Amino acid sequence: MKTVSIINLKGGVAKTVSAINIAAVLVKEHQKRVLLVDADKQANTSKFFGLHDEGKPSLSDLLTMRNTAREIIRPTSMPGLDIIPANMSLLVADKQVLLDVQTPQQTRLRDELEEVREDYDFCVIDNAPDLNMTAVNALVASNDVMIPIKIDRFAFDGMPILVDQINRLKKSFNRDLRIAGCFVTIMERNKVNTQGIDVLDRRMIADFPMFKTVIRKTVKVSEMTFLGSALIEYAPRSTAAQDYVRLVNEYLEMC
Ligand SMILES: Nc1ncnc2c1ncn2[C@@H]1O[C@H](COP(=O)(O)OP(=O)(O)O)[C@@H](O)[C@H]1O
Ligand SMILES: [Mg+2]
Image (cartoon, rainbow, N blue to C red; front, side):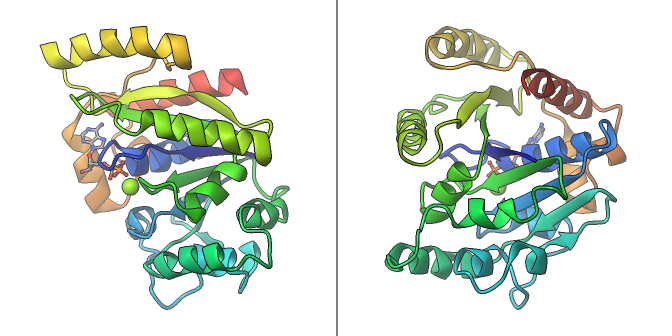
């Protein structure tokens, strides 16, 4: 099982939309068995699949070691795609992990996922815009990091901190952790976006790789979130569906 974290310290950059669609493309186009981990207390990924429940075991019970991964994993409506859901209890669980210094804090998700590594080809983690204990656990459990970026004036906010944190975790816990690359999301064909990409290219090439694929903006994404069906199922010919297929191809070439 290869694990990839979708992360950016900014909200609204399409982390959740990307995690769902990358996972769905891996299942539908490549016949991979995929585990999607919702690591955001907002639980948008869980809600998307109709699997959000404040009362049922979720990622927080895994991080606080009340349940094993197998006890928490739920099937989604898409055969081949399972999920570890999240809910608001992650807010408290994150603090509990932080205070519980008796047990290793950063490796809990990695150790639990280890138990199911034969069941899946890929694990995709949808992260919160945060660097809390949950995000640290996600990064320690990951082989790769993919960073969605929305072009605007503040597109780079938090990037140095994120990269610094990744490098620290690499040193202490996860030597093989790799930034697979950044990719531009919610792309509109206008001057600001086109020039923005030029600037990004120049800045990023020096620091870490950029995926060539750009995810275009389309109303189909918002429709998809209401229907709870990934683009590859709901609108396979839409621009963004094709873009996610291309992005996954690019990623698989590096695996
Ligand atoms: N390719 C796209 N085209 C149009 N809207 C998009 C696209 N990708 C994401 N969005 C919208 O942008 C918003 C933020 O996306 P989301 O995945 O929830 O971001 P994050 O998880 O980073 O906070 C949502 O309203 C979503 O529907
Ligand atoms: Mg999100």
